[in-house]
Length: 634
Image (tube, rainbow, N blue to C red):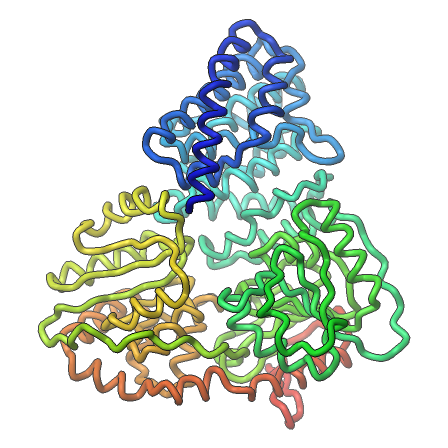
């Protein structure tokens, strides 16, 4: 975190000297000075990183900075005295919104603990429709500068009332502010606002395509919808087909004249990254077939090259941090004339979000790296697990189902030392969770609270993958559900440290409705029993499928919250039962079942079937097992 602290310290020093100048420029209505401050000062800041790592004193300086910009925006530029200044803020250029960080000021205000986003914004669609373009723009700007998902939004009604010139900014704000602020997904009302807002967004854009500039910020939060709704497909389809795809250049795929050529976009490709851990066994299976891996330079890691054979098996495609680099990457991949391109994840990285919207190979497929549909019309197949999927209605792509969870895991690390804590018999247990902060929600925390209420000697340890600077605020939010003395939140730690801590735990609590797999692997790799709630969405069924593959007791897999609480309580009060389950989680059994090579053979058979079936295949899910005839489900 030294680099983060240096970033904050340097940034707050810069802000402290610039604040008086900004305030004076606002009073003097000196547009040139304001413009200069944005480019010369704001352009050097990284608001999100600074807000995550700031001390209390530094946060106060940041809050002054963002509130002063709010005064400039709402009090002047979007006020009656602002004239036509709104145009440079709300009308995008070909390359994007020139002042895009200012358009995200509601998010920065919220993170800086300013009370301004709690003001109820006023923006009546009925009143908007009767206004001139300039009046609409000023009303829109004044509202959106303090509006986030703490307040409901009828996106469709506002978009219908707006002039078409202002709709791109509305979409930009919705995707980059409304879906990200407040950053936590804990509050029930916030979740409800986001879900209804995403539904409204999808309803409007499935009928209305707007021309957005090629801005890398677009889609930043889109695939986060999988965490706050059980029906993300309509929203993701609108995002991928109506927003992202039209904003990206189309590249013609070079004809392939030398047989099937296979490729994989290796984003997030470091050995301890969750994407690498659960999809590397699939990638490994295709290497003997001449697979070429496309690695963004920003993900290069010496360990990622092991086992690939010749250097020709790896192609670097630049850092992919901006639209120019993404365009070059797309052109590079398309020029190879691939027959098959595999995306281990779509949504968690900038390259995967944009490149998945293009036809870069004859046949394209993805899997559970991020366990939700891509929404893209150019993604032909979703490789899933027969033990996970209930039907094909969760995916735009056609489902290709492999046995079990549909993939394998790399072998989890061993704990570095033997367990130190005794196996208690009186409820003095340590509960453990590794779910990311995105998976924490009102229902889950309410269930954990009920568990701890009934177990006065139990403790909960959480590692939600957040920066140290975010731990206090997240602790405060969770303490609204669970007394702070009953739980501990640790900041992001190396994987080995997480495993060592988990080795001391008595029981792993899976999250819901968005569950885990990699986190469960690290838990059961140490022999720790797991309780999981089998949800309706594929992302909430991976844990259940894994436990069934291991032959563990079915009562560890529950179907509702009441049973979740009851089973956890029973296990906490019954040390012999926990030990009995631990005996069934032999490490050799776990690795042979969930880390074996068998799924690789199924995946190779699936790739052959997808190549033969071709792009744009429609129909029911197909189950593929190596050595057997593919079986189409009813």
